[in-house]
Length: 288
Image (tube, rainbow, N blue to C red):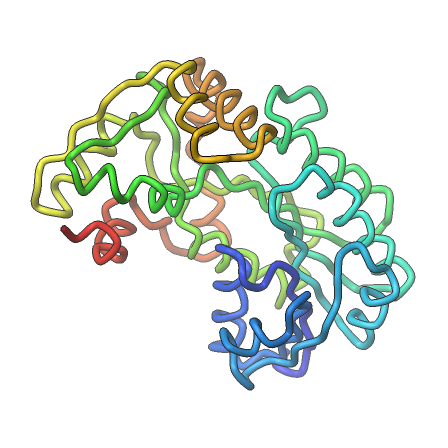
């Protein structure tokens, strides 16, 4: 099993970087696809093979997939992600890739109100048509997204438009661990895993978790969509990402993200990490 060569895309991303780290720890041979090899080398050193490539350059993808037995497919949120990931799938078809693990979204559906969820659904459909043995990972909202709230949390405030909606926030480490299991063992091919944390929480409950873990008061502050949009626009967040955030807010308020799954336990034989565990592991980001 250790002789398997595994290709990782989006290797410097939240989940991708953790996938690489865990594969190295498992003594797997890892090849990283990087638009900027120098940047990837700074992150991973000589522990992995780094190849220059671009998701919009099919020739580079075909070269990167040579002799690869499993690949992790992910990319940064983009209006071009369907084309980009479809390019990888097409190259994998040509290469006869034995198996592929795709990072998707728990809300993925053709009719989803959230743009990125629709994109993921389109990519999943393309992957299904390819015939490549695949594992789909559909994580819920990442706990790591709270890093964007670090400055406000330090002031004792957690802002959100989610109201009393509940989300089963997911630890990226758990998502990566399931990805690694699926990359190393073909028994997971054909499975669609919805990945969540151990409980569905409101933002008020998350604020209370921050307070307990950090040792200072943190209060949940509700904001409306109009103010949220204005603040995101002021921060020059791309319009389609703003659209995504607002749509997810509406879907959360009606209960679309309440699902608590046992997939992490099923695959890894242990429970998923809690929000308190994530906060404790990232205390430095929230230290005053």
